[in-house]
Image 1 (spheres, rainbow, N blue to C red):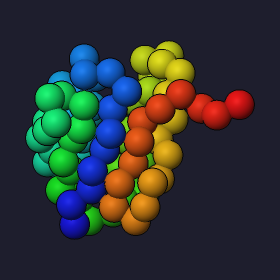
Image 2 (image 1 turned 90 degrees about the vertical axis):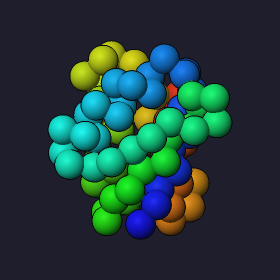
Image 3 (image 1 turned 45 degrees about the vertical axis):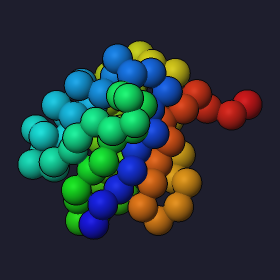
Image 4 (image 1 turned 90 degrees about the horizontal axis):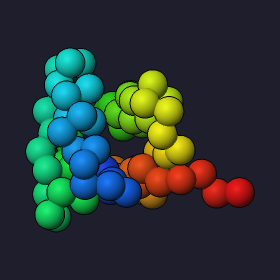
Length: 78
């Protein structure tokens, strides 16, 4: 399955790719660094990894499921 991940900041791409790669999930940067294309079987796992990464880096971002095959890593609504 291909999962799109929209990033808020381009600088986060390499770190997010490294976190995914550590779990055996392939990803590549698209759209001038603001989007990742992820190859994974489990979208929920990708969401959990995104959330864990943001939390471990004390970043104010949460993964929001846009549809069955895409996330946006954005500041929480509120």
